[in-house]
Length: 294
Image (cartoon, rainbow, N blue to C red):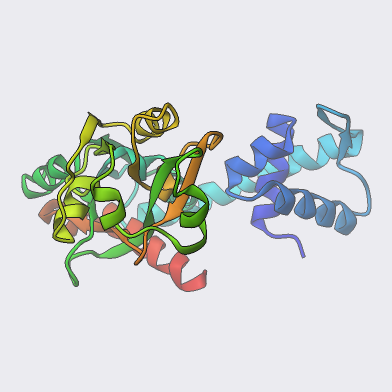
């Protein structure tokens, strides 16, 4: 059965001439997008796209289908805009504060889906450290802030969580053994260490301190997670990195879980201004609905 996601994907493929880029645009995997396009074409009874090695084109009938799909979705967006206007949401603006690793991983899908539901509401993202996010919330500079490890009951919604992993050079003497059993923090504390902070107070150093340990040989301190991984690859030391912040290219690295496991959790916290903002409350309602249906 065809649904709105099929039609959005259809238009994205037509615009990008590439299924991988289109899948990323609508929040699907490449294989899921390929299956969805095949299902849509089977339902229609004719091919919408032509497939070449590096290019996706459209058939003559496909061009007409895409034109109608654009009109249909435009009308749907107009209806949603009317609904927003009736609720006092039209022209709303949300100021959302976050730190970089969450902005690039957990937020894009949420903001993309929200924009589809409420095209008239603008979301402005401000990036800073976790301390700056807290200051902006307290000063009502922002409506919403992403807070790491919020105390129970403080966050209006939980975005997700992220495991901490140890990153070792592939040639490290413990690499093979650690892959099988994980690695305790105490086995990392006395080794040459690349400390990455990600602009956050919760990092390798604070995790050690929470466990009653001290880093004895910090060779270099950097803010960027990827830079830390590059330094580990060069043999400068070992590092603790959030799993979502790992580089795509892991050649020369050994990534192993911490034992026992350690996670960081991300919650959305409202400022006083956000609590009285209809647009902000609409975003939170949408997120909770998505989580219930997931």
